[in-house]
Every structure is written in C-alpha cells, then in structure tokens.
Length: 280
Ligand SMILES: [Zn+2]
Picture 1 (spheres, rainbow, N blue to C red):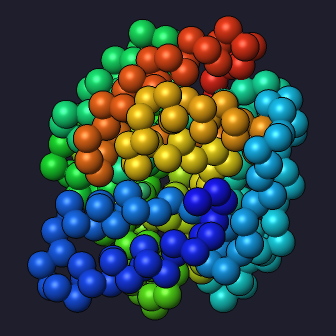
Picture 2: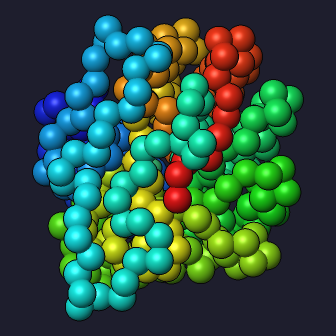
Picture 3: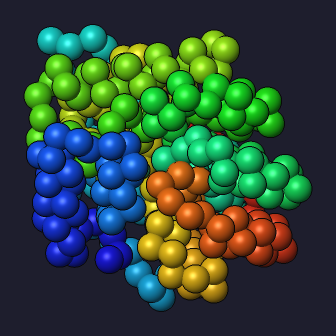
C-alpha cells in the first residue's frame, strides 16, 4: 500500500466503476471509493515514488519523476502557474505542508479546524465541489482561519485520467467555481486529482486557471482507520519521503484523524518542523 498502486489500484477502480455503473452512485459511494485507495501522485502509469521506510526526516524531497513534468501543449491555454505536480513546501527547509482532503464535512471539518487553530498550524484543504457548495459556511471558516483552498474535483472520480478531455475539464473547473462561490470569492490555488489521477491535459487545464497540480509525499492512510497510533507511526516513518502530508476530513468517520493531528502537530513542532503551504 506504499506509494502508488501496489496491486490495489485495479480493485479500487473496479469498485468505483461498479458504483458508477449502478447509476445510483451517491457522493458517499464515491467517497468510499476514495477511501479505498490514495496512491501517490503522478500521472496515470507513473511508477511509485522512491519511498523508503528507513529514510530519515532530514532527507530532502525526491526530485520529480519524468512523468510528473511535461512541456505545455501549445494547442491548449498556457499555464499561468507551473503544471508540474507540486510536492515541495514553499520556503523549503524543515517543514511540513499539511493537506486535508475530501471535505468539507459538517462533522469533521470543524474538529480539524479546532486542532489546527489550537496548534497555530495552517493547512491546505482539498475540497470536493458539491460539498463546498452544500457547506459554504465551512469553506468560509477554512478561509477565515488562514488556510488555503484546493480543488478536489466534482465527483472524486479516481479513474478520470481515463476519461475524455471535456469530462476532465468539467470536473476541474466546475469544482473550482463551486469552491470559489462558497468561499465568497476566494479561489482555490491548487488542484489535486482524486487518487492522483492526473493527466498532462488535466494538469495544464488546472494550471491555465491558476491551480497548481498538487501531489503528496506522505499518505497518513487515515482513511483506512487503522488506529491513531498506526496513523502517527505511518506519518513519522514516511516523513523522509518529503514534506507534503495527506490527511482527510471527509469520506467517513475521521475521529482517528482528529486524534492523530492532536498528537502529531505538537510532535512536529517539538522536532523542529515548521508548517507551510505547498509551492505554487
Ligand atoms: Zn480524495
């Protein structure tokens, strides 16, 4: 389950496909699909990032894989931010870029916000467009606390890298509009493809609208609900992969996530980490 794929990708896609084929795929069902797999972040087909369980937190982030960079297609609108998938934290150094996905959620987002506020930590919230539209107060609360917004698509379709361009474009731009409207005019600054299902087209489309494609280095795997101690152990073990850490405030019961953050944030400060936003 480390890095991208390792065997569960097909099952993940299969489950999602079944949900879609059922024709009654509720958002909850789609989110369940999300929770079944959050592999690394490269374009479809990219190999796993070279993670290592023996890495030390001081190791610098790995350079981008070839599949994560590309030359803009001159036939498409030009990027206004880099279309490469961001993994680094702005300002560099010993820092963590905390990213919180799949919300906003009326139960869990306020609890996550409270933990962040208590610890003086700013994070990036990757929101699903319809949920932002359903809970504009939560989007505004995230912005009011100084966090950044990230577009996490409309339907959280982890196979959208196999869909046509019009579909990919609508997933990105419709959600961006929903999030911006819900926030009262604050636009998302990043685009994180569900399950890392980026394509060069989706990355350029996002970047042409000011959304930096956003990956991750550390998957807390809190969506598996393995227990708070296991979440903490995973993050501490994988911090050597790079600074961008993935948690979730939506998609299910996230009380383990809240408990893990309550312990992790003071631990990171005590170990000399600062908190920053991903590069743009
Ligand atoms: Zn997600």
